[in-house]
Length: 309
Image (cartoon, rainbow, N blue to C red; front, top):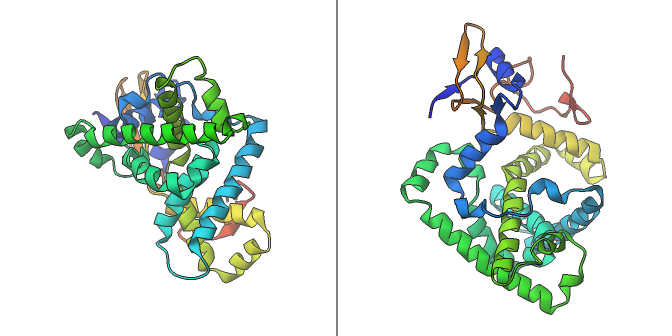
């Protein structure tokens, strides 16, 4: 790899200003994904994340989201302790699978098997700990391939249960995925549906669970904000989530250079050739660009917009 990392305000601004056709974030992301995810998952896909979120789909997604959260809360019981980041990670899996994997996938009998397998092929680790990719490469993704084949088995069982219970008649996101494989015989059909579900699921998760956990941490530390959110102030909750992400996110931004281009910082200009990578940390200037940004404050946001000085 030829890699240029920028961290100063002007360097970061220059990275984000580059058009996708010159410095592709999509190509950079895919390069990181391929460190961790078996190539077999990308071959022959018929559904991608952006295919499922037409306006009519969102209502179905929200229904499944509410049902999945109710299942998660029921599991908690009335008292006890939990490891918040592990719990929100499981919650993220449950909410996603309930939508594109059908509500059956969110049930404990399937979720308990799917979560460790999905964590094994999880791509978000590549963005937070890219150095771990060396082990994945050295082992030729053997553990990830085993996990993917085990996911194939669980998905085939889930689809068989769904068919037996009459679930094939439901108009949900899983039905939309399955419809795209109606011309394929078993077992390739079930494998194709399952791997479409996995690809969509991986595209939706990223480090969502950590953002959720930090939002809960910040609310629990501030009883007045927590009470307002409990009273139904969803705008405040939205602002808490944005501020939590701004303050706590730690992950890499990687762009692959597709055309010869120039990146400038405060001191010099760098000429980058195609095939080179340009990187920064997502949080590079988040706490230093203005006075006061090193502390949590929901007033940094007005709705979804950052309140710039």
